Image (cartoon, rainbow, N blue to C red; front, side, top):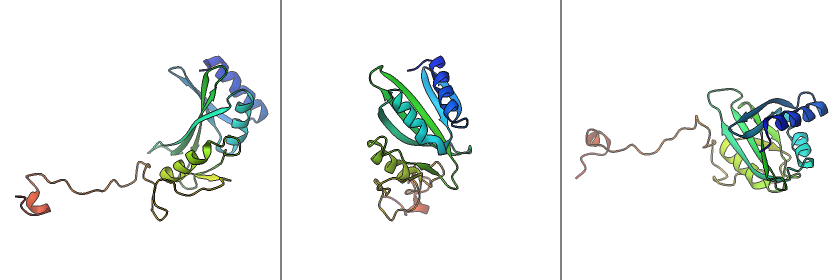
Length: 169
């Protein structure tokens, strides 16, 4: 992991290129995270790739319910030469959760972006094949969002068995 000083220097390099690209930095328990402005995600990841973070380990969604902006997209990048990892986080509003696709930069993002779209409803602009990957095509809703109804069958207990299904023998 880059230390806190290197994280701040990297954030400043990105801010020098575009003043509004990095909103914040987080360094907690040895984990370095850049909080990115969502429209700037592609140039930020391009810059980090030139610095040696050439392996995109994962792209995943997060739901920060009840806080807004509620949805997050987390990119985990790895510099295999220096064995360092850095995270880039972008927060999106639920009304229009859109962010640029990074499949052209990192081909491994193709299926990970599809999964994030399928589970959280984040639309990746410019994705070559953005469609559901885990749920049926006609499925409505996004099951990993925290406000998604859990549903299921009622559980039968001795105190409610007659109201639910009748006497269980």
